[in-house]
Image (cartoon, rainbow over all chains, first blue to last red; front, side, top):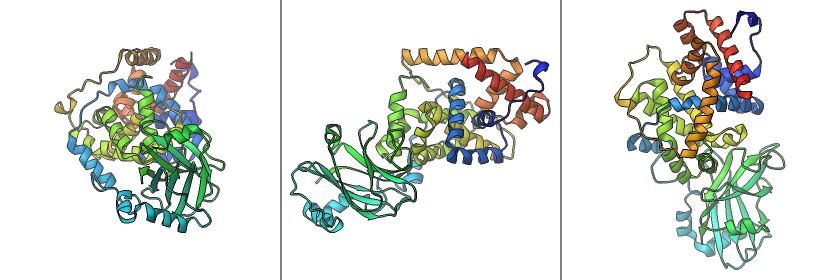
Length: 233
Length: 184
């Protein structure tokens, strides 16, 4: 750095993103920019570019193992317990115990007026729910008809946003089943062989909140409103 | 740890965590918690505090995993950024001075990256090191201290005995020169 460029102090969003990524600003300035990152996608991208640019320095962070008690404390803070999943609808095993397949067909018949559940052949069900979200759906997949029935249980549509249905298996990236009408019961035909192949108990399904018309990236971009594992019924 | 060989797996785990998959969350924790704890520990230099903050880091990851796709950045750099920001927030909240380095806390775990990962990481590191080397030594040190130890403008200004605005001007120019250098 020479003194000749003394009058050129960089400004604008790019350098602000760099300062935020580096974390050199005062706590209140950092906090204000952290809020901006949440709402301003262009700024978030600039910050991400700087974090990538500086990330080789992270080799200086030497890995140190944590005692198992830390993970237990984390699970307790995040999930309430190390085992149980919160909420009635998320506990599908309880639900299965209570209801069974015949009652599920009944619930779907009630919840899906005009949509007659097919005779069970190879059927999978999932209860979609998420903590902090009021949106819950019951999913039934019938391999005989190749369609996914979605019974809307609770939760309102969000103005100007769409609900998008996803399936994912194991560690694979989610695959979209498309945008669904928000907040109503519906049926989604499964025409893709890829998605038919994914319809097993190894998979889970989820509904995310997306811009109108669905995720622009092909992967979920908005918050997950509801999710759950597919179970054999 | 930003290498291509670990990227697909960590990316998948983050995307599954976005779908509220607890198994994926456990696997992500197993794969990355040592590195993220090391990050918090380096910034905070206090084992108990770093153990607390690393939990906040993973709570943040669970809650914000759906934001990962928006930034388009590499998964380890995204995770480390969350850890750095949490640790720096905690550092700024402290009123007192910095405690002495806890030697027990610095017990090192072998990250065991593959040869390909090492080569990519070494290449990225060389490029950034080369560009830092083009800066004056004290300014490169300021960038490193800010990144690794969470130094603020105020800390850096005090250490280098210059006014805060001077330090800000130095660092802003240094960062833009780094960016230009890395783009060459």
